[in-house]
Length: 209
Image (cartoon, rainbow, N blue to C red):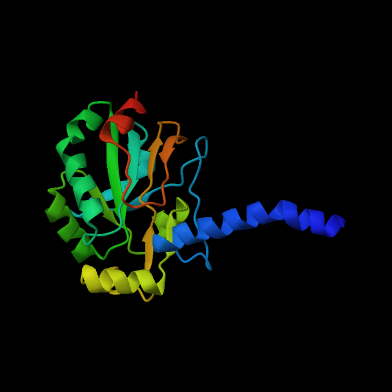
């Protein structure tokens, strides 16, 4: 009797877990593998090292000596939601930099494709091609893409995700956002599996004050 009672109690939770997996799968996330949940407010931000498209070395430790960092992740030049967000970001960039913050935008694409993403958005912010995927792993945003979603992107957006990123396997970041203060702590985050949703520029600016 106790066993039956426990099963009845667990059914809603099991159902919720299945529904949640279905939602993530629809967004292209392979739930049979690791599903990222992102870093949280109060966490020490991992160091960010890389190079801008101009070849300038990027080191978050040096930046944080003088400025806060707004760290944003995008999926690729093929993603219309990303292109729209990055274009809006570029249009409002001065409002962010006026708060004494540096914007770093990180993506999984090859250097050539990152340059194309910059051209599409008219980027004057710093774009980093995370070709080793290390920054995405450090900030817990990277996930494996389902075969079905890969096929969808190939059919409708004419892009092979793995090839676009110059990787053997298809992986993408959750398009998350973090604000890192000058002490190196994460003070705000936006983490949403639905790639069609992004933080507003106003929301970012309000959390920089």
